[in-house]
Every structure is written in C-alpha cells, then in structure tokens.
Length: 371
Image (tube, rainbow, N blue to C red; front, side):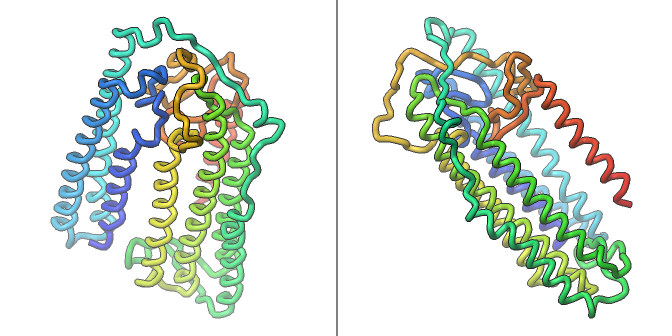
C-alpha cells in the first residue's frame, strides 16, 4: 500500500485540478471558447460546467475505488508492480477528463455559432501602455526561500560528506534501493545544481511573463488592467512558494541517500508535506485569483465600462482544443493560456519554434548523458 500512495495522491490531484478548472478560467473563455462578456453567464455555459463537474466527481470516485482495489489485490507483489497497476486508474481518468472537456467545448461552440453570439457585437482589443512604462516588479523577497534552500542543501551535503558511505542510493523504490552510485562530490553537486537550475529557470520565466502582453477585457479595460497587475503579484508569489517547497523536497530526499539509506518516516513525511503545501497554495491562489485576475474584485462597480463591446473572436488561432496558440501575424512570443493558468508560447512565431527546439535539444542531451 505504501507504493500505491503516490499514484492514489496523483489521482486525487488530477481530479481536483480538473474540477476547479472552470473556476480558474476567464468568464469569457469557458472551456477555451471566446464568448462576449454579456454571454458569460449563458445557461448553455452554466449547464455544461455543472455537467462537467458532475462527470469529474463520479469518475474520480470510481477511479479512487479502483486504485484502492488494485493496490489491495496486488499488494503482495513488488513495489514497482503495485505502483504501475495503481497508476492505471489515473491514466483512465485523464482520458475521461479529456473526453468530458471536448464534449463541453463542442457544445458551447455549437451554441455560440447557432445563436450568433457575436452578431452585432463590436469586437475590440484593449491595451494598457502603463504596463510598459511602469511595469510590475518581481517580488524578490518571496524568492529568498527558494534561493536559500540550495545553499542549505549544499551546507548539509558538505557536513555529511566525511561520513558518507562508499556507495549511496541513486534510485529507490519505496523501501528498496534499485541502483547505487559511488561516493563523490558529484553526489552533492547534482541535487544542488537541480535546485539552482529550476529556481533560476522559474525566476527567469516569471520576469519574462511580467513583460508579456496583458489579456484585457475591452468591455472593462480599466478594471481588467488592475486585475492583471494583481494577478501578476499573486501568481508569482504562489509559484515562488512552490519553488521553495520543491527545493525542500529535494533536500528531504537526498539527506537519507547521503547517509546510505532510503528515506525513513520523517523524510517521507517531509516530502509529502512540502509537496502538498506547495501544490495546495498554488491551487488556492489560482482559484481565488483566476486567469489574468478575472476573479479579483478590483473595484465595487462591476458594470461594463464599454457595453456592447467584446474581445476579438480569435478561436481560429487556438488549436488542439484551445491549448496551442498559432498566429503568424502576432509578434508576441508569450501569451496567456486559455486553459489553466499561466502562459504559453505563440507557436506561429519563429522565435517560439527556436525556443521549443532548444528545450527539446537540452532534453535529448540530458537523456543521452544521464546513463
């Protein structure tokens, strides 16, 4: 059952993330479909959202039951088999979520086209130039824990190195060591390097996202500009907290290995606790904030500043059910996602293709060198 705990937790996180997804989306982007602000509360959208959540709830409960049954059935096998078998319901749940999402999306697209939601609506694009002249600043104080954790890991590694056994665990599976490696400074340098690299990468991406184009609502440009600034502040803090928690999990994982053993109860508890804390904080902030700050009450007056206007109907540029943005006429490289929270690349921009190719090349090099 210990080996099955990870897959079961993964299943729960997948189900919860899918259930809260409609709350994170902009009201004008239900299931990745662009709709005018005056149609955001349409009965068709509300009905599909309720149906989607009901399907996720039932499927998640059935998947959890199946995972528990499978873990019990193969509980006498080795831990790898238990973990793989227990992960099967999570894979099935992901496929079901994709099917439910596509069904809801198609239904809204059909109603949008049949009822002519954009007929007679002035399509506009709103821009806040103050985001360039007076941009938001990265909250560096919130980055301090994430930047200090690699130094703590390095200090602990140096302190433990003299008493480190000749061979230390390189890969474990629950209570079993699957591979060993010889004692060397590389044993300490690798996890510290991973912490430093992931932290620097996240901070760099956040700094870049602060300069990306804001997705403003033309019917309420002033309010949405304020919401966008608050969104940047809140989501960057949440992601920096997540980075600190992930670095802490690395520390809890490597200390037992440096002592020549698998993680004990305290180390395992630390791994689980910090992982859950970081993920839960991001989810809570995302739900309370919404993509682009759409759930933030920026002012008391929630009426439209420019009634009768709406964002340009740009569904044609969003491919793969609204997950990929491809627009050769848009010079932007980084744009806000339609599904989930955060940013994605404009794959119609050649520079975005170069970035993707560079990342794939790094992954390939890492795969070749890892053995």
